[in-house]
Length: 456
Ligand code: ATP
Image (cartoon, rainbow, N blue to C red):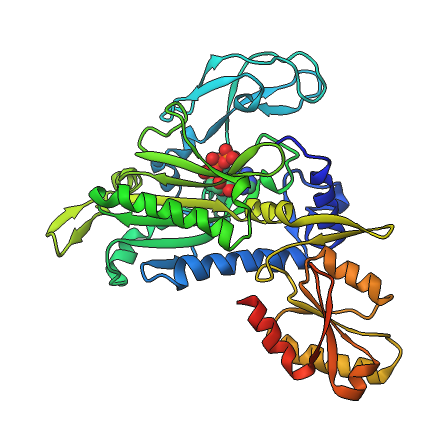
């Protein structure tokens, strides 16, 4: 991830300054690659999740939401291959001790054996530490990304379990209870937004590469002969979601097919949706046709048959899975990169987030023109209270109006409503648009309709 005109630093700074993202445990000096969402970030993340559920579950009739636990039977991770094969190739700088993924170092080409997790160097590239420029030793070690913890309360009798390395695994484990209880018409999908944990090697990519994150997953179960067609449909659906619902520009999104070396041996086809965060395109979501491997493996290890009987064709088979696996943190980051704007107004810099109103943490902010006139503040508070039951709204009466507009611009609030002296005479307010900065007068009882109409 090469930075672009310090845009990354500007976004990181805005995230902290305005309560979007806080580095974890900062009072202890931080905890690498772990972040917390602050009040504004929590709202933006919630809006992303809600829109994903609305579009992928609510507005479809073949996808069902589940919410699985983080801890699972450890055998599930043996079945999936994660305990041995979930590895990255590690090179550590002997001088500064920084760790790097060999496959991401300039000029290096490696191939993983997906059964053993071992990496073979096909082409050795740069041997200069990207950070301190010391010489690197070309010894590649396998680094397992799974995190472990222990369950049980008696010392010496605790057993090792894994934190989910990817959120989808308990969708596979829930295939049987789902099949037997939901009377869902085939083909069907299960969707889940869940936490995943990875001991990532690479540091310093802000939300792009973190050790604890959320994945937004759809596992779509279908007949093998239908999988190619459905795969193409899901590719379209997911690509369009980023453009239409997240407001990402088409020019900064593209598809990348996994090369034969990279593609996992059982996948029928695998493409990633990539976004140009700064100068390079990087993965936002993987859309893969995983064949019947996952259900077969979990079946083999559990001794159960994870199949489906189709009453129409009278055939029994192990379903193929089309998987769409995207990351909440990466989507959040992409939305900020896409929407960050700076412009000069007279001699002053205006920073604003040109974010889709549906994603904005606050849909509107309400201000009394001045804070020390009870008639104005009472009126503004009444408006604020009536809007609160409809949308997330902010209240601000600190500093002058110009400063309040700037604060709301920086957090992407699309509309600012000001109660002024004219309001006391004719019950109208000004509504100021974030992007055009134009103000228009509306009657108080038109505000909710105005915002609802704009949000459509
Ligand atoms: P990469 O190689 O870019 O780290 P991956 O191929 O390991 O990604 P997947 O295992 O396919 O990623 O996970 C699906 C999605 O989960 C990714 O497309 C990404 O959006 C998200 N994701 C994966 N790892 C991380 C991470 N460490 N931090 C934040 N999001 C992640």
